[in-house]
Amino acid sequence: MSGNILEVSGLTKTVGGGKKIVDGLSFDMKKGEILGLLGPNGAGKTTTIRMIVGLMSKTDGSVTINGRDLDEQGKACRANIGAIVENPTFYEYMSGYKNLKLWGRMAGGSVTEERISEVVSLVKLEDAIKDKVKKYSLGMKQRLGVAQAILHRPSLLILDEPTNGLDPKGIRELRDYLRELADEGISTLVSSHLLSEMQLMCDRVVIMEKGKVIDISDLSSLNAYGDKDQVAVSISVKKGQGEAAKTAVSVLEEVTVASHETENELLLDMGRDRIPELNRVLVKAGIDVFGIESKRTSLEEKFLQLTSGKADKEAN
Amino acid sequence: MFALLHNEWSKLWNKKQPWIFIGILIVISIGTAFLYTAFDTLEGAGTEGDGENWEVTLELENEQYAQTIAESDDEWEREFAQDRIEENEALLAAGVDPNETNNAVFLNEMIYVGTAFITLFAVILASTIVSSEQDKGTLKHLFVRPYERWQFLVAKFITVILFAAVMLVTVTAVQYLMGTIMFGTGSFSTPVVEYGMGGVITTTVAEVFPQKIGLYFLNMLMFVVISFSISILFKSQTLAVGIGIFILFGTNILQGFAPLLQDYFWYPYVFLPHMTLQSYVVTDEFIPGVGLGFSLAVLAVYAVLFLGAATAFFQKRDLV
Ligand SMILES: Nc1ncnc2c1ncn2[C@@H]1O[C@H](COP(=O)(O)OP(=O)(O)OP(=O)(O)O)[C@@H](O)[C@H]1O
Ligand SMILES: [Mg+2]
Image 1: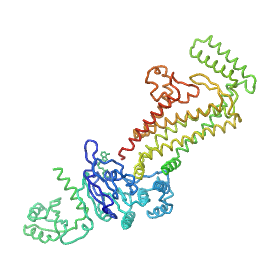
Image 2: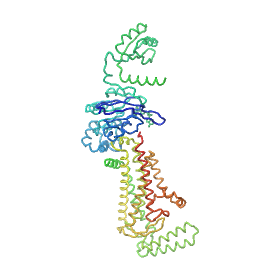
Image 3: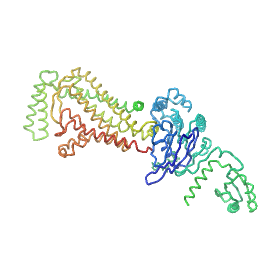
Image 4: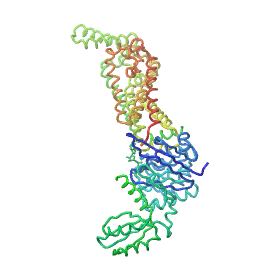
């Protein structure tokens, strides 16, 4: 057996009218990995998660959790999962403690009183745990949701937009906690459209759009910064010379114009080591350069490039 | 599986709803006792405490009714008088004093006031126990736990039945208590007369009361099955409560049409006419050839169909 906690292959969901809201999605997740599912609104993240946890039937493809096929051993698969789908939901007329108690009972007696208090202090809800959930703030519910998801010590955590409603401190704590779990070998699949968030939280991200995987990025390499790396370069030139600059730049190979928003600015995607060459070309073409600025391609830019580029191509 | 039942039971009692239901039933049971005394003194005015004279009173009444029959032009009035004569004759024949009351007689006569509300409350609970969790979004977080979906349905269904049983015990206990306080202790072997569509029978409390309760419970179970299934199939609690209550009243209305419909061969195979099982206390057959066994068989088949369809649908459907 491979060391993968989760294997998704060719996952497809077709809804009424033959529309594919998830389309041939494939990715693997290693044990102890924190994998991000990143995509704009409506990309199909929640739908993917629903199929993985068995809330929704899949039209095609397969899901394997801890070596078990979801279709054949659904119950055993779910026993290994702790999940928040879309948003955490509770019995609002009961206290947070009673909610956890109910949840614990469904884990077949493995959740003790000590485990409940351990989890409660982990998500820092000690003060509110005896209050009815209807009095909780959004962030408190989110914390209780995390508590509920990890209560029975699952080996795979699936959290749909867990940072939604959390304050910066809460986000940081969640991040640290997920990292701690990862060190213990517990894997987390986390979805978000907050890119900067994902950059800090995840080992890898699956970028999806319109139900398809458009990129799987290893963030450790993306965060590193070397001479050969692709960077985003923004050039500001004299007003009115934007078009000329674009033409001048076009002689350079392996340099692409990412966007050309205003008439005196140009955004390029290129290797960092070629900036001096770019400078020479611009000067030779008689363009007045006010500044050349290079930024490391953050996930955010990559994400935006990937998704908007794709969208443009489809529109044309 | 037991964990699920335990959870459902604790979720139920953490809500206000069941306490309100129980509270209303207690108030109704107490109120029934007062109403009963009010009507009792009204009816028996002048003859109260006259232990020997009740037979004379009944005979006098019958003479009056006989006169009504002779004089009245109103057919309904004549029919009513005829019915009363038959009832009084049955009382006389059985030696049952209609003014004699004790806790056993009170309980036996008035239990159906409370149970009408029990059915209503059971229908409401059955229609909301699944669909409210769907509306609040808690259902999806149940489904990600290592159980089969039908197990949640079973736990919820049993919870409704158990709660109905608790309501029934409450009503019986409070009415018995009120009966004891207001009418004194009496024997369960007190002879009583039961009136029904099929006529009048003479029996004892000990004999007839368990029949009433048993048949009532089976009947209520059927209402629960229907509203529970409909709330799942149509994903709507309002529709389920509505249909439940519609059937509740609809069965009574349908009884009015029974003479028109009962000649059709399909009539006995529709579940609606069978949903007044309590009438089997006094009747053996509600239309010729259709007895209790037949009714139960028809209802059982429908119950299996309803629950089967609901479960199959629930197992398969995408939860959003
Ligand atoms: N049951 C359904 N029937 C038809 N279309 C659906 C259904 N559920 C979702 N969709 C569509 O599928 C697409 C993906 O929805 P999904 O909720 O998976 O997106 P998401 O990536 O989670 O978005 P968000 O970031 O807004 O949460 C959307 O366009 C949505 O309209
Ligand atoms: Mg979503």
